[in-house]
Length: 583
Image (tube, rainbow, N blue to C red; front, side, top):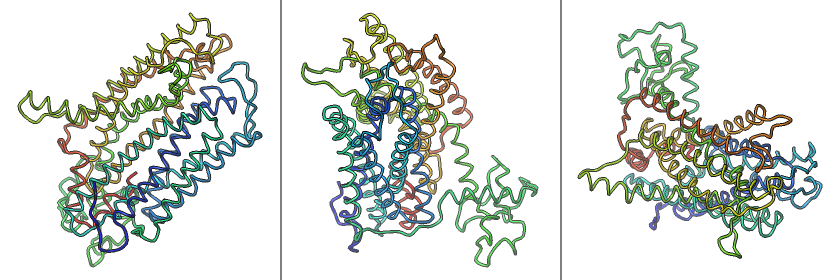
């Protein structure tokens, strides 16, 4: 743990860092405390069917994962990180307060219906729905402002001339940041969900509001001691310049035998000639007229018409990893099924003892617990044991980890389909198929094998993809690497919503119940899970093709920590470039 003061300057250091971590932890605690059980609120208080509620949450999740990208771009390029986090705090707080008001004001929602009852004809009015969407939109925008800059803003507080010490301190900060963030999500999925089930929506949604107030206060109270770097050019601008320059110079004939001096490159850069792959982008760094294209100091006179070889190669590296990234996006679709899993758990026996019952919304916490256990087992037990048996250091390659995660993810959905089939048949056998509110005798613990497998998939594929991006992309693109996984989660939510729309539109009729019916006992969620399992196995085949086309990883087994040390030790002035937009 970090214990020493980092700066002689009174600004920044450990004190500022604690306020930033508290802000992020409390915000996650509040937002996940609201979203985890939201499907129940939508179906009970707004009369929505299960599929419609799930689609709204898919879109909310997509916005929540994509907004940090926009927030990072605006913070790095225009407004700065401190104003962006402050804006995010106020916006999130406003959204949560307005959402809490829907539990207080009866006119803000429809009259209460029995959970998922087919006899409930109450529907939310357009103004009620627009107000709900407005609340969720504010929360997504606010989360984007906070999560886009929190990690990078924390790194700003640790700047010190001694780069080697800084590297170790920064690594410790990253570790504690992720530990505390994960702990916040776990607490929200257990304690806050239990409060909502036991004390109702008014108290259950009021507690996150109080937590968000504390989060906002914790951030602004330390304003005088923050280090506040100014905004500057963002990596996204560099990519845009390469594309614009390539288009503007599209009529230039390329020749692989061009001499080195025809290409614009940074001083001291090892890259003086662009690679031959994706050759049309090479036009962006071709010098057509040195007197017009270059300033006396060697910089480009128009950066939107002439880019460096490094900028071109960075964009090529990003394009090259996109196929691998897309496979992870498809795997994340399985992780987005929390709403339907919550419905399953709500119909099953969740009692641990005769007096204590696990809330249905808390079951998703088993995924966090499972992935954490698998990560620890892999690093502390499996790898040392395998290395001891083989007599040399042994680790799975990054591509092997990703592929294994994809395969196990597909297998987990097959297991879930089998569990759902048994659950549905049990409901029919017990004569409660027409009553989705009735609890059956089948234990909800049957869902644990699914969470066990999906947790393993996340430990392999999720961690593997992050390592892959950090290792394969250039060091100068570490901020891009940190955002790729979040973009994948956002895209996965949109894909999941599209799949549900297709299933609802094509697999239902007057005499045929939809697979994702509001009455989970009459629907065929097992068929829906088999569809996802099939798509998962198809994704694995697609991944094998992408992996073969990509070739071997150039970074070997390098991980995130290694990249952090390398990036920090080289030059302390690169901190803003290397860690901007981390979220």
